[in-house]
Amino acid sequence: MTAIKVQDRRISKEIRVFADFDQSASAIWWQDIDEDPEDKTTWHGTPYQVADSRHNKKEALRLVAGWLNKE
Image (cartoon, rainbow, N blue to C red; front, top):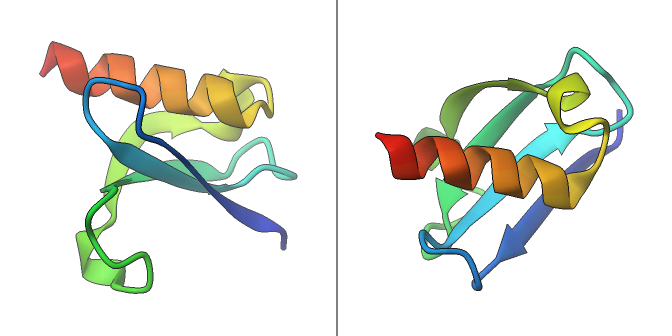
């Protein structure tokens, strides 16, 4: 499994996402960028899977950021 963490401080909520971008059905998780990436209790689920972002890491960030801004 190739799980990848992606982060970007330019979006309105500073987050990182985590998913196995080789697997279409892999869930996309998010975490506040100031949290410890190794602390599994601070990761939050999203309604998205890697297929929703077309296996694109930046698109996954955009999707999750947009979803969080709606909440």
